Amino acid sequence: MSDRHILRRIRGTDTADGAGVKLKRIIGQPGLDMLDPFLLLDEFRSDSADDYLAGFPEHPHRGFETVTYMLAGHMQHGDNHGNRGDLRPGSVQWMTAGRGILHSEMPQQENGLMWGFQLWVNLPAADKMIAPRYQDIDPERIPTVQPAAGVTAKVIAGTLAGATGPVEGIATAPIYLDLALEPGARVAIPLPPEHNAFAYVFDGAEAEVGEQVLARSELAVLSQGDTVTIAGRDAPARVLLVAGQPLKEPVARYGPFVMNTTEQIHEAIADFRAGKF
Image 1 (cartoon, rainbow, N blue to C red):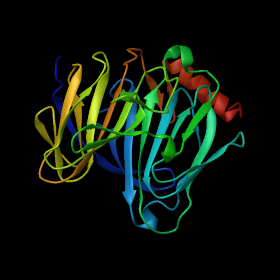
Image 2 (cartoon, rainbow, N blue to C red):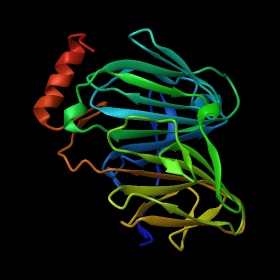
Image 3 (cartoon, helix red, strand yellow):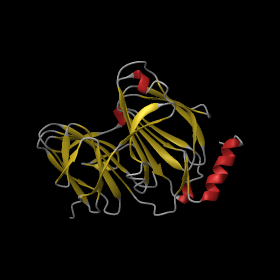
């Protein structure tokens, strides 16, 4: 077996999106434009309503998938086809935008902590114009396992320690794990050797990833290999570990549209303006 190590470290940049929601952008910024097939990773975390109350009013997507993982707070999803869904603590929504959708995510609280992640995952060229679909996953459906002493893992996508996450039918065969580590705990996580992968420390002071220390709010781009070793240090920590099959296809991006060519971007803009989403 070959153990993955840290190739690059990235710290998020403070920005705002939607109608002014303050967040930290980790993937999709100058330091890390993308990590095929991952196009964007945002962490939103604030207990000030002014930072999140305006939410994400109706906006379009085409050609990729959005993954929302809520840690704290309550948001409501809605779209132009009448679909509605609640995003509450521990829940996940894996939305495949496909050929086009208009959707919104709006806070359902006026105070308290709002905390979570949004990940964008590219779609292969053959799937960019498929019909939109959702996988709305309540926290009770996400299995929790203990792959090693002092380590607890929520398996959102992929398989670990005999448990398989509820996310299904995704072209990039993703692994999405939320790992909680006690001080000094250590675990070796198997990963498909062809997948690109990253680890992000989102709680606690630091963790070890591939025998190297990774600080809170740092993302590690991992080398190739079939395992990654993650360990706690002097205090408890939580780490997102995400991996996916790279598509190795051309990427043309314009805001909420991700296609393979500039011509397809122009078509997406025209379709959106014509009300075809």
